[in-house]
Image (cartoon, rainbow, N blue to C red; front, top):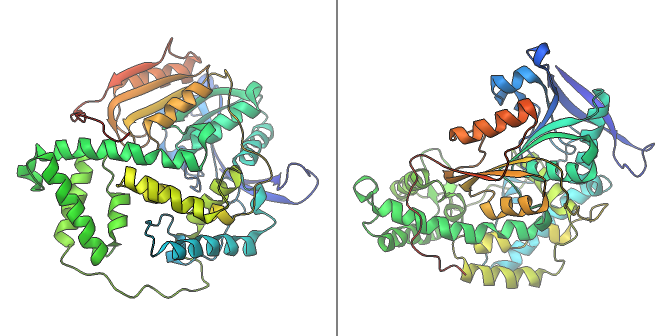
Length: 443
């Protein structure tokens, strides 16, 4: 069942303008076991959550009314469309002293386009207001408390809710976690040192399988093969079999070394496609909405509106990108570079400081490249009443919806069905664990 719920655009003016949220509901399949409602957020920020209930296992669907929703500013909930071209919707740009001015112009253009389209609305597209929206959904459903499953960015949304509404928090599962007290710029920069460690681990794993991948029989040879490919793609972008084009920066960004087998297959695919050339003329800019506009516009609305910690001086981004590129050459410049947040309209409120003892269950893969383990450890420190299940050697993003060891199901099932958390934090081993890196020279 789908419905629309009206909420204030500005909770400081509850009698003012309203917006509509798109909400879906699947009632508990076993009324005799029903515990309550379980709201969900799949991450992003900017992803749609209306269809997330379809992904839950039977044991959860029996006990909870599953509530999906598109957060404010996203998809079917008063969406933010900025009219970005495909090139403008691209989120990460490599640092080069010769092209930095172009990156500044891109960031300013995105911010100005969004401000022109939604200037009065942007300050209210924040995680704090989405948490308030969740509480309105709770009230409309007639529930005293809500349970929750949040993935990736959804862990931050869940953490903010526990801080704002601790007495209305029931059973919260925070899967693949964000450090809530480093949002958003410093959190994004956590990815760079993690990527370097994952790259070393990948090069060792791949060297042991040279017969399969032919990228080199030592880690040093494997790393050289990768950087040679990056340099080639920087000279002439590579077009793969799907018609997608990749620059060297794209390869650095999308290789995904935390997933060792998938990364090796990606590199081989790009090497095989390197003989093809990409179009040298970019697509013309238009005023029409590009396919990626909704996702990117929603992403920047939250990233820029949530915190007032984004530097306003472009030179700060220049210095940080140059420094991080030297220290973390894989993606350091991509995660430290300038963004539209340098020119964005400030959000309506300061960042939420998360520091509480509200119970929750945190799930984390050791080698998650989208939300690194360090971020989950930051969330665990901030939420003193939580427990954390770490899958050592685990790869990928999103523990509960992906293959995982029995310890995860045991902890989740016990928590959702009884409300009992593990006695302490739990670490269990993933199967088929690749070798760990032999040394860490990233610091």
